[in-house]
Image (cartoon, rainbow, N blue to C red; front, side):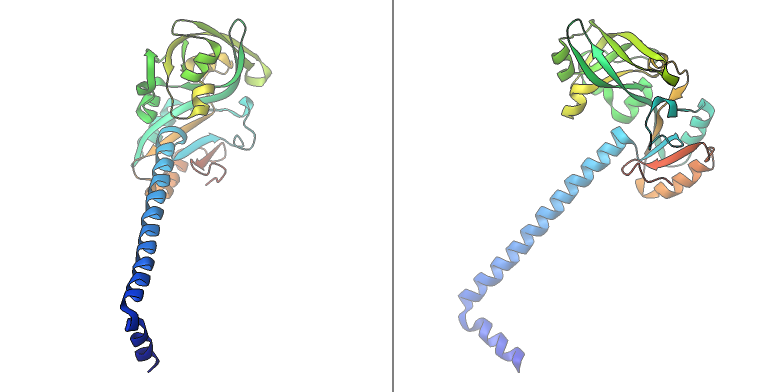
Amino acid sequence: MNFKLSWRNIWRNKRRSLITIGSIFFSVFFCVIMLSFSNGVWNHVIDETLRTQAGHIQIHQKGYWDDQVIDNFMEMDSSTISAIESIENIAYTSPRIETFTMASTEKLTKPCILMGVDPARENRMSSLARHIIDGTYLNKNDDGALIGKALSDYLKLGVGDTMALIGQGYHGASAATLLVIRGILQLPSPEMNSRFIYTSLSKAQDFISFPNGESGLLITLKNERKMNDVIKKIKSKIDASQYEVLHGLLPWKSY
C-alpha cells in the first residue's frame, strides 16, 4: 500500500520528478566518470614510475633502506644478476649507484644526486636516451655525464664543458672527480631536471672508491600481478641474509 502511494506521488508531478531523477542520474554518472578517469591517470603514473624509475622490485644490501649511506652499498656479481634476469616475468634489471654530491663550476655550486648506471640497461628500462635534447648518450665505460636542462642552465654548462664533483666515498674516503658533459636531458620531473647527474656505473664506482659496489638493483616486471611469485624466486637465487628485497612502490616494506 505504501509503495503504491509513493509511486503515485512520484508521478503526480511528472516534470518535477523527471528533473529530480535526471539530476541525480547525471550527477552520479559524471562522478563515476571523473573518479574512473582520475584513478586511471593515477594508476598510469604509478605504473610508469615503477617501470622507468623505481622498478617494481628493488634489491639492496641488508639494512641499506634504513640507513642509506655508501658503507651500506652492496656487491652483486654478474652471474647472480644473470640468474635473476632468467626468472620468468622479469623484463629488465638495472644496477645503480645513487649518492649525493656537490656539483661545482668556477663560481657556482649545487647539491645534486649522482646516478651511476649501466647505460644500455638503463636505456632499456627508462628510455633515458630519448630525453637528450643536446649532445650524445653515454657508453658503457664513459667518464662523462648527462645532466638535466635546469641544472645546466643554473651551472651555465653546455655539451663539452667540465664540472667538478665533490662527495664522500666508501669507508670515509674522499670523493672528487671531473666530468665532461656529454649531453643535456629534458627530464619529466622538475626535481630530476634540476638535480640529477647521470654517469656510467664504472665511473660512479671509481668516484666513491668502491669497485663493483652498487646501491641497489632495480627490477621491472612484465606483469606486476605476479610480483609475489617473482620475489620468492629471487630469494631462492640470492643470499637472503645478505640482501633485502623491497617493493618499488613501498620500498620500506621488505619481503
